[in-house]
Image (cartoon, rainbow, N blue to C red; front, side, top):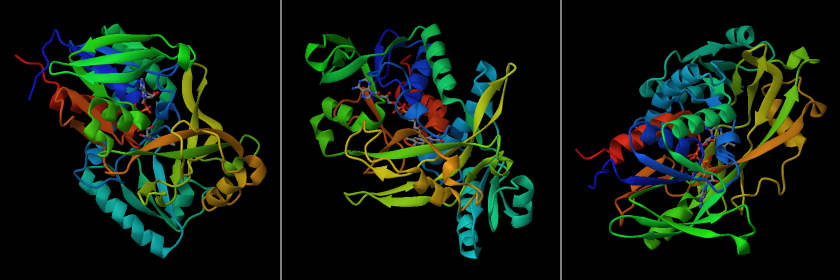
Amino acid sequence: MPEVKESESVAIIGGGAVGLAIARELSQNGYEVFLFEQAEHFGSAQSTRNSGVIHAGMYYQPNSLKAKLCVQGRKMLYEFCQEYHVPFFKTGKIIVTQNAEEERKIDFYLVRGWANGVEGLRKISCNELKELEPNIEGYSALYSPETGIVDATEYIRALAHLADNAGAQLFCNKKAVEICARDSGFELRIADTRMPEDKQEIESMEFDWLINSAGVYADEIAAMVNSENKNRWHVIPVRGEYCKYYFSKRPELAIRRCVYGLPEELRTRDGTLVSGLGVHLVPVLEHMRGKYCLSDSVLVGPTMKAIFQKDDYKIDRYPESYFLERARLLLPQLRLDDLHLDYAGIRSELRESSDFLIQRDTGHSRCIHLLGIRSPGLTASLAIARFVKENFLQVAI
Ligand SMILES: Cc1cc2nc3c(=O)[nH]c(=O)nc-3n(C[C@H](O)[C@H](O)[C@H](O)COP(=O)(O)OP(=O)(O)OC[C@H]3O[C@@H](n4cnc5c(N)ncnc54)[C@H](O)[C@@H]3O)c2cc1C
């Protein structure tokens, strides 16, 4: 396999949490890094349109990349947040069951969590659940003390700042529109997205290495690199919508932890089975007197809907009543007029694998593709970056 030499350049397509974490990891280790993000701001796709939950790691198949990189990434993310003053809060989490049958299902995640090395996981009774979260209704629960929340916008800012300080060249409003793979590297054609499409200036740049971290568009970038990838990988956009409620005048709606029901599944039009964590309740951070704490608002969501366009955040959104129906199972006092529609995010589901897929291009070994980096991709981002550097980009001696 080819090895990177220090004078060689690495282009990263995509300035989400993963692309930026890779840019930081590589630039801090002496690589010459260039990152291109098509949007006006870094992280404005999946990376800031999510639940902001730092997942503990009990959902994922043992030994999968998701399991390993989530557990490792969670620890790295907590340390990163401490060191660089990114707001976070280790809230803990409860997965609530509604009856004996659901309680049996929770054993599956308990055992998986143990296999994945998730610390402190345990089942709790209805009484203990009431002690932890008096407003939540349930039969029993799985308690995860290591789960937390992070301010994703501040995390993105910190990653970009650190990569920039380490010498990475980071560009917004720059879209990779064509890629020509050569024996010795890649020619990227980059459009300036500040102009209308027919007036966009296109510049050509050459790089020795290419990292495809384009989220929901990663299948299209892969097909630009190598036409054989066109039929190999398909990213299916699945939208997740959110509502919010405020409990300052309704203390019976207050929660202190992330509150989930059991995971759900969705069958998309092409028959792909997509799993999600179900509509959940997540406390929101706020800044008060120089300190971060939990605010009086709670995020409710995300829903799951397969959509046609990868940038469709709006068409046919669910009404508040849809959220109410689901959230009320956990929080019976919630009313329709408590809920306000909020943002939506688009998951990058990969038809071909439910795991993260990180691999070299089959025809061009100096290109590394990252596909299907959906949840827990935010949690895992620092570990994904380390994994890419250690497994694909060791510097030649
Ligand atoms: C609704 C929802 C809830 C989630 N909740 C959680 C959670 O609670 N915890 C968790 O750990 N994870 C969660 N996730 C997953 C997490 O958000 C993602 O795994 C993570 O943000 C992926 O980061 P990324 O950098 O790979 O992708 P993205 O953030 O999507 O970044 C990819 C970037 O590539 C850019 N790009 C694409 N094509 C081009 C091009 N041609 N040229 C230049 N730039 C391009 C895009 O504009 C985009 O900014 C959630 C995701 C969603 C959608």
